[in-house]
Length: 178
Image 1 (tube, rainbow, N blue to C red):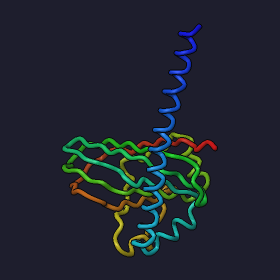
Image 2 (image 1 turned 30 degrees about the horizontal axis):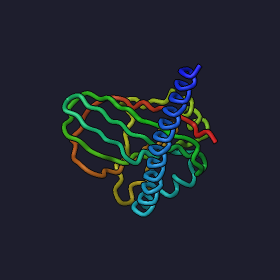
Image 3 (image 1 turned 180 degrees about the vertical axis):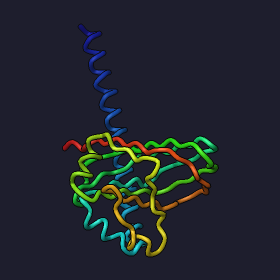
């Protein structure tokens, strides 16, 4: 009986440590996403309209990407609906083609309608090879348009990458449980 009790207590302790570590990771991602939103709002004229008028958006404050012929990218982000945080997301990308280097970017995906956001939250959301991000430069957001219910903006943070590849991005959504 003592052994079973010890195993149970040990298992609960490891579960609590694991949940706390995940919570700390999520808290850092949330802080980074809030900083990214503040920076983007100051940097880009016109982007505020997307933050105000979209049904929702996901902010990936730190996406790392790299490749040499074969490439990949990965990042974690925060999902917002009508300006309120509702969940966490992760991004995975695989590509093949002419590419070399490594880069860190901030990526923001805006959803035009509730249905577009709902599709993302269902977990089957992917970008095809035709989808591309608008690289943020002064004034570019004013003329950006939704395509198939989404518009994507990317802000380079560090590194350099030449990229003429095809691939796709896959996303996972995890709601925040209160």
